[in-house]
Image 1 (tube, rainbow, N blue to C red):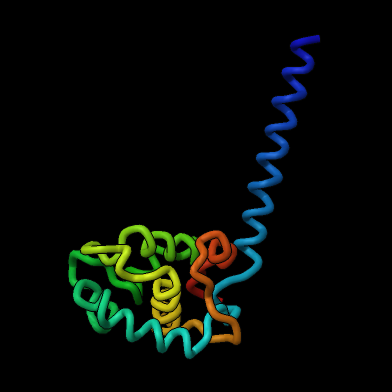
Image 2 (cartoon, helix red, strand yellow):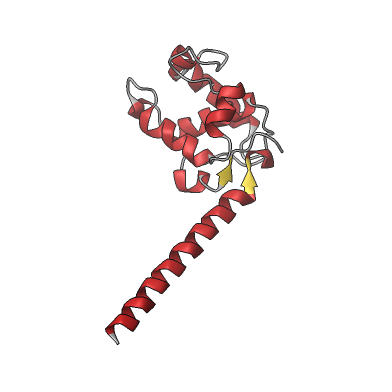
Length: 145
């Protein structure tokens, strides 16, 4: 009897895990950066913040400096393709700029991500990116439409 209960508990936990993983994959797979997930105004704000907080390392053209990775082109594609906007945002949120991540607000970091998306030629839309990792994890970065 105890073995049967233990088996049922393990089966229920496994099923819940598979269901949750599947739902997360569907959600991230449902929206992509090709769906207009930021606005032009947000990308413009992001460009200004990028200039002051990011360009020293990543370059004015987002091509990196050899130490800091490029945020555009093949290097960006290789690093972020098939991940989510939330993954990119979270990396920036917790570690950028390296001299003081708290000096740039989450909203400003979402604006920077919008600027990066615009430079990578993703289309703007009517809704701004939110400065919330869990929301941004629902948007997949895919290099080709």
